[in-house]
Length: 268
Length: 184
Image (tube, rainbow over the protein chains, first blue to last red):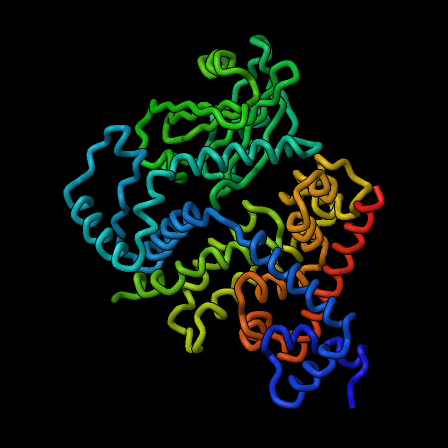
């Protein structure tokens, strides 16, 4: 006694997924052999399923693996109480900071442990700073999409700077540079790489300038960066200057061209 | 093997699966990465209490719950209009804006010659989260109904019916779009 299309409908998918057995399976197979329209449905669903399988996976989890590894380092440090030696980042080595012998030894031990389980860290470690730059750039673009770029709107640095007190763990340099053509618009909070950061917002003509501010060491590129360290980057047409002063790391991002951005930074 | 390397040896191979699931639930790459990172830290904290027989399903369940929590929190922030929701009604928005909003090609982009696959991805993007997740778990991760049931915390029968409804909705959207395209 063949079943109707309506009765068989809900089971078609389960049949294709090999999730039916015995009598149910035979009933669907019999129906499909005799019913061209249900066969066509099954065919279509299979094709669409293949498309999802082909187009759905998100690639590039490698940089995320790096982030998670750092997050687990922090987690262990918090849990264990004992200070967990951190691997020196590429950024800190490039900046020429000397790595103590115990950290080197620890790095070797950790590297052995990690490589036993996964070689992904070695492949992604050098991308740390690129990852951070990408995140700050993304935060800048996200901010541009919003109607209101500030939570505290003021051109008075003595209003904006105190606003950050208690909201972020640093007291950033805030200057109103209206006379130089860079008026202060205000401040807001954002989040980068799992950390809450302050953002000071300036404008130059029609260009927005977002300055992301965090404790030096809170973000990967800045970790171990000595005072006065400075770096520049360009991505997707946005320019960035990053520097560290008095234990605070600043990431200035804008669509201003680099010379103008440098000019502004020189005033800071 | 210590706890940390034992966790990483088991968890890292599922990173792509975790990221894919989170992405298709929250539809933003950077938010998905944050969610997966938090989920892995949570999983690591709870690692000692893992007693099940399928680590992947346990891990994905955490990622899934974190993603749904994120979605519901965003919904509750009523004064913040999310881009995804603002442009959820396809066709009423500027194509460029819709693309920025969801990181996924809009239907209009797709029709300019990328073929059926892109059309399917755009259709998947339009489905409700509970439909998206069963399709992702089944078609991409190739999980059995049993495992999908343990990730999503519903009975197997519900997995089966939800998957059937999700496929029907997806099919309707894609075929309607293809018909519209053919008429142009």
